[in-house]
Amino acid sequence: MNIEESNIANLPTTHGNFQIQSFKEHHKEHLVIFSKNLGDVVNIRVHSECLTGDAIGSLKCDCQAQLNFSLDYINKNSGMVIYLRQEGRNIGLLNKVNAYALQDKGFNTIEANHQLGFQADERTYEIVEYILNKFNIKKINLITNNPHKIESLPNIEIIKRIPVVVGANENNKGYLKVKKEEMGHLL
Image 1 (cartoon, one colour):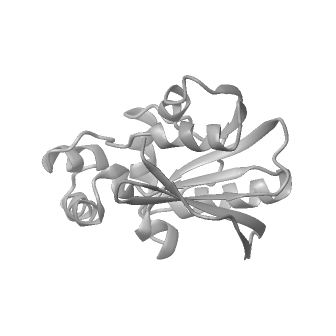
Image 2 (cartoon, helix red, strand yellow):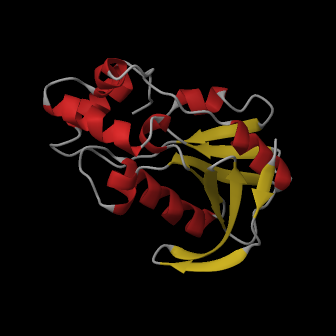
């Protein structure tokens, strides 16, 4: 892998004081947000970018709530959020908005991706293992509801899964139902 790494910088946030580092993989720049003292077993959240949710507060998904939960969790318990630039399950922002338009016509999130010629989930996680190795992290508690993320880290010892409990709203109930029933998320 040809990865370019930034320096480490301090990042005070509304969730707490963290450190950050960026990892550039091809044209994608990923961000790692972490507490200073990580320990032997590190609490890790692998979070894929969701501009509409994370930055704008879209109620169509639970992404911002999951990110906020994770940042609060690592602030209290130490750990790391690996923020991957894989917008729209890695179909990109333009295609994500097109998928939203199809959802407005009655397609669910998986059906919309299929209509656009994509799999239900196009994300990859190779960079995660690279980052964990860079920080010499071998054992983790994975903050996730997605069993695919657990399977995607075969060379890392996952001690336990920490569920992300954030609740639903009127706008994302159907989305969460599809994640649970069709994608196997542990909600």
